[in-house]
Length: 122
Image (tube, rainbow, N blue to C red; front, side, top):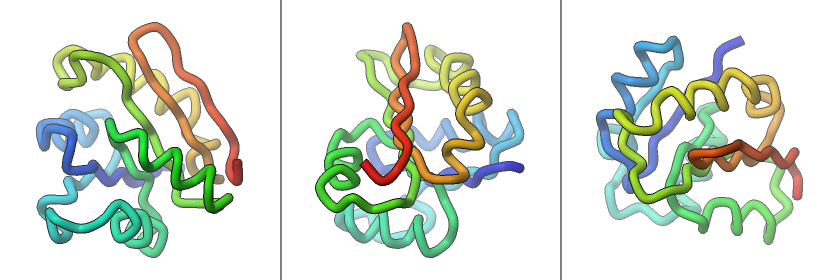
């Protein structure tokens, strides 16, 4: 099983090549949709196309909690330096550990020291 990842506008497009090189199909929102789209529009697109949203924005997790939606899954990356050259191995480890949860519906929060998972809906 391999999840598909949609990178939010607040993450570097460099993540696409980094994730793809590790086996995850990835696309940056800037190449897929309107850069001015709302978070809801991004979530709706991801759900309809079967993508997991990868973001640095806390609003996606909040939206899942407030709506009790069962998808799409969201990966939130936390920290000061969220560039691939600093966080790639940490994110890859979290993706491998939680891939089945993300495929089923989950919110995964990743920072430099740990990852946490909440199964959807929350």
